Each structure stands twice: as structure tokens, then as C-alpha cells.
Amino acid sequence: MRCPIHKEGIKLAGILFAIALVFCKIEKWVSRLFLLATAFTLYFFRDPEREIPQGSNLIVSPADGKIVGIDSVEHVPFIDGPARRVTIFLSVFDVHINRSPVKGKIAYRHYTPGKFLDARNPKASTENERNAIGIECADGKKFVVIQIAGLIARRILCWKNPGEYVNSGERFGMIRFGSRTEIYMPLDTKIEVKLGQKVAGGTSIIGRNA
Image (cartoon, rainbow, N blue to C red; front, side, top):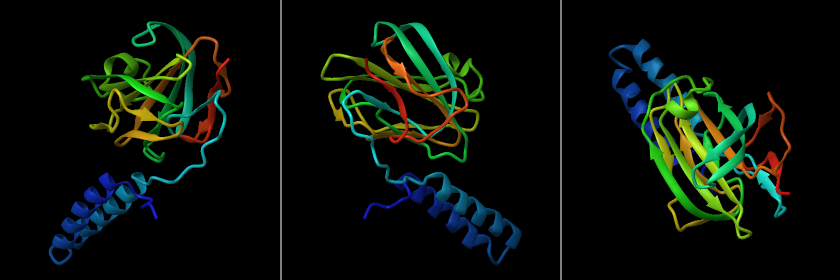
């Protein structure tokens, strides 16, 4: 059975727990702080299984969180043209695993170093540390998912490389401690979410291919 806690969290929680043990007979209040940090780390790195909706025209959410933006962008790298964009804000209480919105081939990946502005700040899209992956479907349609670091986040993880294939809803990475995820889709995509809506990665339907 798959562990419901991602291995990154298990390693970090182990370190924090070891520190708590060191302080348990020296400074108990410090030990309690590290025990709380251990518990929160395990909570933050939870990695639940998801039931992925079936349908070749479905686009599923690449992240858990709240929809904070729905708009169009004139030009997106890899798509090489205009696209529809849906922006998701992830608080520290959301699951931070990123999932592929569609089935296809990873045909593009680009990491950009940057700032660590609050992920709710619109400038985070262009100024923060971020990692973009481009997915090309069998029908030629292209999608881009961008992992954007937030105010607290300091590490973006991506486990997929160009040339690899992903299924809809498959895990491809995560962002630590509060972040933002953006998905760029063809202009004719029918958007199925609204501003302020809560979504779950791999489960919620973001849109439908025309």
C-alpha cells in the first residue's frame, strides 16, 4: 500500500523529530516546538490517492487550492501563441503535490530563478522562482503548467523530464510551503471553474477540450 505521506516529508519530519528527542531532557519547551513542527510537516506533505475522472476531453486541476485567476494571455512559450490561463493559490494547508492536467508527452521544461513574493501577488507569475513544463497531447494540443514558489516556499520539485509521458492526474512534482500553480490551455477550452472555487488536484475538472 502506498504511503500517504510523501518521502520528502518523511525525511524532514525524521530530522525534526530527532532534534525534539535531543532537547526533551534539556529544554522541554524547545522539544515541544520541534514535535509540533514534526506533526505539521507530516500534515503538509500528505499525498492522498485521488480518483481521476475519465474522459479524453477532460482537463483536471494540476493542484489543490483556490481559483484566484481566470484570464487570457497573449503569448505563452511552448504553446507559441495565446492561451487561456487558470491560476490556483495553494495555502500551507493545501496538499502541495502537482498533477498533470492531461495525458501526453512532456515536450518542454524550463526553470526560472526569481523572487519569493507572496503567491497571491499577480507579479509572482513573472518575478518569482518558477518551473514550467509543457505537455503535448496525441491530438497536437499543448498545455503548460507552471509551478511558482511563494513567500515561504524555497524549493520546487519536478520529477518529469522532456521525452517522458504522463497520464491525466499523474503526479509530476510539488512545491514546498505555500505556492501558486498556473495552467495554460488552448483558447477554445471550455472553462469549468469559477473564481473563488476550491479545487483538488487530479480530481476537479478545470476545463474541457473543444
